Length: 382
Ligand SMILES: Cc1cc2nc3c(=O)[nH]c(=O)nc-3n(C[C@H](O)[C@H](O)[C@H](O)COP(=O)(O)OP(=O)(O)OC[C@H]3O[C@@H](n4cnc5c(N)ncnc54)[C@H](O)[C@@H]3O)c2cc1C
Image (cartoon, rainbow, N blue to C red):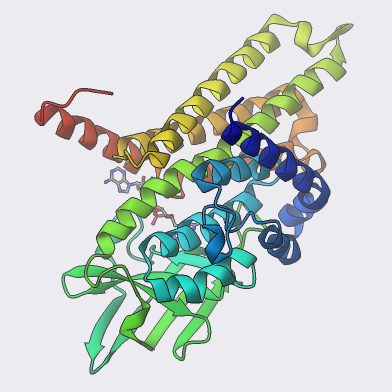
């Protein structure tokens, strides 16, 4: 075993213990009461999980995307909704600001987000632009030495709690990324949504009413926001895949356990060939989706990313997770249909996997376009 492998095994062990101690006890309440366990989230900062990809000099743990994937997978096993809030904060917002921000922005914002003192959101989606995200209406216009930001964003993870909003706005015919703070004059929050799944991961709206933004709050270069959006989506799709491999693993384990405990016709359920068929297929597809996600993760770490690998990773892990969670209910019968067992929650959570971070249809569109483009440039598959 090499040194890195030992470090990652140790991290997985620590996160697993944290999840058993802190997350399992609140996972059901998060769903039933739409409760966001703010104190657990902030503890993840103390544990070094929030800033896992951030170098130590900026208050992070310096364990890269592999570390972030491990945390997502272990959180997803217990609470996909906490894993979603973690991903929105640590990957979509914090890692994005670190990768694209200036030295001053890194010094100002990264330690606060890494420690959990601040919570962050990424604001791309608008009421009239979801899949067609670049067609946003929120705009920032230069007036004197400031930008004036007007518009709104919706379906924003963590928005009801966040202090910092990495916001994309139109600047002329281009796009620019800005840091907006909850304390900025003209910024306000709208309602918190009541969702079918991923409950406890707070989702809300935000409004910008002539918010004055200093140019020092531009992340990356003015008018180059599209590059940040696209590279951020690649990273986000890979990392969020691990929520769904973790969740699928839990659903499979709950199915194996129940098929052993539950007896019908004088036998354990797993002695019936139709149940064996289900378990074998669930295992095979879970393993395939996990391997695909780790393959995309390797490309992300090596910075060899085109849109195909991340889109394929989350496309497949989300579809397989949803299928496995559905089968888990079937194997559990009425037991799986009851709220108290937590099995039906898994399916409701899994469904978000085909909507967030670009829908299944958009992922397929990206993969197909990328394949055709490679073909036209004479580039074969890896
Ligand atoms: C729980 C949750 C958390 C979220 N968190 C965030 C967040 O933190 N930040 C953020 O910016 N956004 C967030 N989103 C928004 C999410 O990214 C969008 O919901 C997603 O991109 C899809 O947009 P839409 O819902 O407007 O669907 P639409 O774009 O309206 O699409 C509706 C349907 O039409 C299909 N469709 C659209 N265009 C095409 C096409 N060209 N070809 C074929 N089919 C098509 C879609 O696949 C979908 O099935 C979140 C959403 C949810 C539900």
